[in-house]
Image 1 (tube, rainbow, N blue to C red):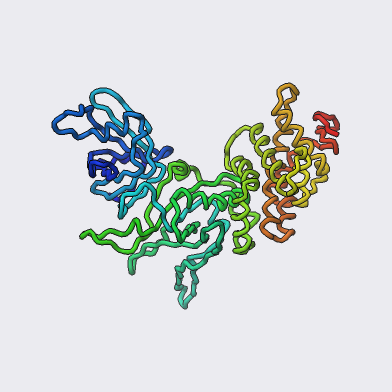
Image 2: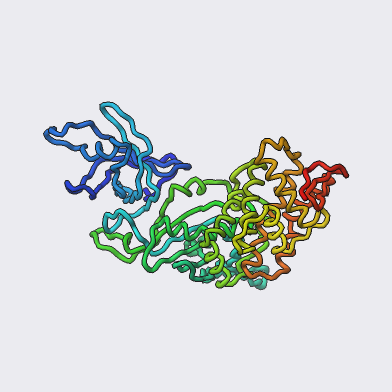
Length: 469
């Protein structure tokens, strides 16, 4: 069977630990897989006394006695399907009694044998696939041409060529968004494109841990979520480094190829539902709208702590952090507050509504059918404060909360256009004629809701909100 792990599969083999002072240990163990938690290692052992004649489980006993404090950083699992490197282990469950069982999970699971046992693996390359990248990149690794022949016959020529890419450098990494294609064929019988999904590649000449590579790819995830405005999931990860070469039957090695790697922090996303919005395939920005310099600037900006803290709450709201509108609006208010602080750039403290208004000015947002910039900014700030402070005893009607949350999402997403150097017309189209903007404004139109310059929310001519001067 293939050297993989999927839900329902159990692999029985041995683990090897070379970290002890008493030499290398080999002991039987089992690997299981959970779609949400990832790989789990099961190690059965016996309780032994120090003076036992032939101790076998002393080291495993030590691993789990203090709930995993003495677990080695790396264990390597072997069975007939291959080798799995379990890195950054921690205990997950421990049973007690005369025949105890220790269980551990790895933060990083690499489906290949390493050259050496190490506490830390610094690898050169990591690739990842993620929802939304294909629609954003618009690569065409497969093209075809149909030639119509006499007699109603036709000849179809298929060209498979994975050459499209966008590359840039930032924060010590080389980045690339690359096209990819894999296919299967049998001469005279069939031709099938197995996969044509593009991927993100980070390269570190000096090497970086797999987790650091993944962290370096988070700015691209954040950008894609802001562009699409809906949840996106990581789908796969692979790494390539000389520490994980291709092993031959005689024990020699060849040049490394990409091998599967699983991160416990993203594994649950691999089986998440695919995005289904009818507008998903028509994002407001595409890769062809950007330059390598713009993407480098974005990654560099994301390395600024103030900017990252502005982006993250909004990204997690858009990515489905909560189904309830109240925490959504409050997290979006945090993002807008920090975006405004970032845009003012003078490190001064200001009221929330001023920072929100600054964000609207930067994105040239004018929703006059709803209210003025200052009025909308004050309404968002007021409702956020109402939700934070129970002594106000103010709970906005759900239709108003829905509308203000939708507008807040748009304001946050609109921040990326000028930062990426995109033509102002694309930003203006997004905030006025885009589907998400039209849907948000329709909430106010259908509910006959307007906002005064003081932030008071008026429904059918009756003021229902708190005003701020």
